Image (cartoon, rainbow, N blue to C red; front, side, top):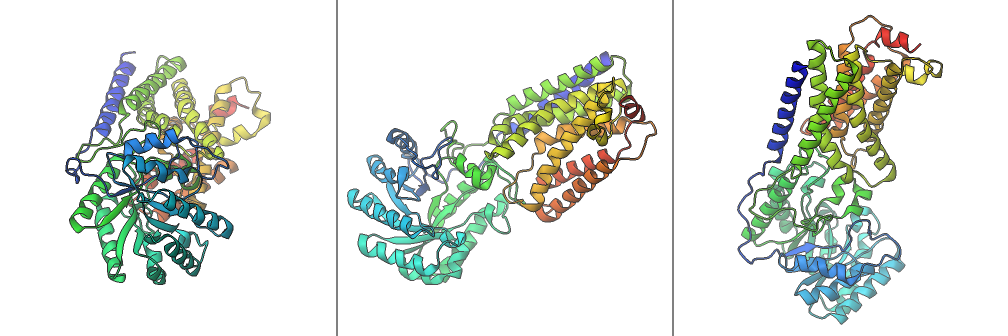
Length: 535
């Protein structure tokens, strides 16, 4: 029992050391803001938790909006809104109490009747709260969504300008301004969105500020007679990589600090997106859509402070503790299977414990951040369950000397009456892991833009099954048809994901490696004794 204990201590030390290093705060540039200095403007939406703008009849109490604005008052001089209807229509009235100016949004879409109500509501707000609304942003990314032609937007701009007497603008991704320069004549200033993460060719965090500067300078040349407002610029703190663009707390702090510093140096007007994380956006944009805020939606605390080191893994202690816990259970499960193991068995069990221990805590922490779409949420819960169960079952079987069982065993009811349930259980877990991995993989093949790479949840099960397959030494039948089909789909998906995402996306590379490892596990000849016992 000495050898397993020493291996457990070694695995626990590695897990703790890795998470300690991942949790260390990273140095940030000096704060771009002097003491008491505020940001120019920040996008603000009043939705928290399960609240969403498309919830019919949603009521948000003024006290909630007041609480948000109290948090924003020391940080910014202005908030940008996106609609004049519903809860967002209350912001202007409350912002004035806190000395905040408002860039009042007017939401436009293809429904002309709704557009009319938006415009009338916005004009009414301007009459009721003079001096609070600085300008109207008439339409947000309408051209990007393809909901109205430029001519219709121009007509709305001219009407709002004529009836309000206030400055007006239209906001869209920068490239749509270059495609429709005729809109500029109807605006007092040009409002562009520059989001390096969402570019067609995603820009890494280290190059984001240079990219923003280059785009803004190009738009200033194209519209030399107009002021330019960067109406949205930001970086997500959580979510999937796009090429080399990695969402993380440190990258968010780094990019926003650099943008604010560049804006001060160049005299730019900049609106940061956004004040608070918006969980409802995960319905539309996956995990990453909900994590662009300066403030956390759950704690309502700032996610970083300019000039202060930032940790990418602030919950690293919990992650390390959960990881060490699952590693301990892996060794205990192996002991239940067989107390008298060989060196080779103990080393393979240690690999299972290490792979699971390094990732299980991350999977647990990520679970609340996974997509709010019901089907994806159920899959995430299922994969988390596999991350807990598969390593324990695999270490138990490995200690007993059992090898991997054929996937087809789980599909053959005539063999379910086996007296030895271990091979059947392993076949079922292999099938469940393969199905979950295939579900994610095919999503990343056919609709990848908003899909995450569930590395943490999948690493433990794949490593455990691979070690079990690697441990098998007996001759056995060839893999079945189901194994071959599953392996082909997984390996093919992995290769496609690499080609589609690019080699700069290390999340994609690791996920593809997991798919290939699982495919090779399916192709591993099933253990002859396990197959015979289940017959």
